[in-house]
Length: 331
Image 1 (spheres, rainbow, N blue to C red):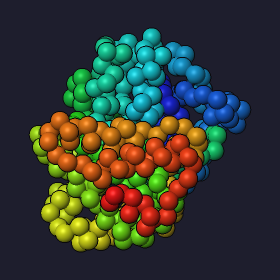
Image 2 (image 1 turned 180 degrees about the vertical axis):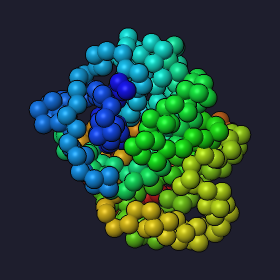
Image 3 (image 1 turned 60 degrees about the vertical axis):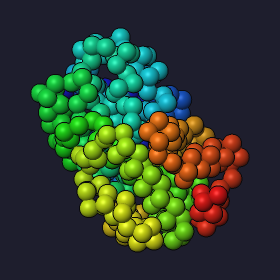
Image 4 (image 1 turned 90 degrees about the horizontal axis):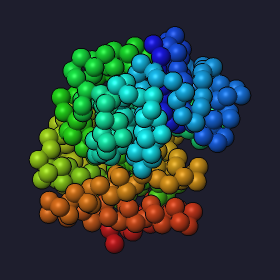
């Protein structure tokens, strides 16, 4: 199958390399040093899925219509990326692999004829060097329909499921908000400059992140969203985060992260953006929680502080110690 991957970063690059290894005809879009590296040396996949070099086509925009497209850029870059590639995506199914609660919904005007799907991926992947993506932990990727039909969803899931673990979810909003709860973990590395495992050694910071997750759950519920579809966030964990005293919820959270991530350092996607000197998508993560919380009347003080502190790191390049970060999140 001809597959176009718009955005050969951590997740886009991972799927591009896996699909190439499976025999698909893959073309990716990239820019700058990443584009040059892929053209010259191929796209190198390392880590949990094994090592491979994908000799794939690469351009700033897709050169011809694919049979299936993955759009895997940051939330703030997605509308422009969709518009730039719209000419070759007429009636092409598009899987939007993206954090936040907009996803394919924000691309309907740019891609009015494309069957759209959203995807939430629990693959822990890093893109820190041009031409190289490293997977620190495999994970499930879950797809849900926006404008696509059930048949189009199942076909896309079958293609992607041939190279990684893929499931489908009954509703897009529930899937997006479930991933948004999990994405609160990104704040700890982003503010401290440490891996997630190192940052959560601080009981105080783990408690602050658990509180941010609790705020996110309460906002979703107040907005009428049922959290479902993401295996990493079963109902039992939702109840733990929402109802237990924060110290107990934080302990359960740390145990879960340790079991899921192991000892391979995971920087999280927000810190990866900071290290590459790129804008983060924090306004579409904790910022979305703050925005919707204001609309539905749910206070979100920790999420508001996360937005402020991540922007502070972006502006100054200075990180905080985990305990100092926890104090700042309580301020």
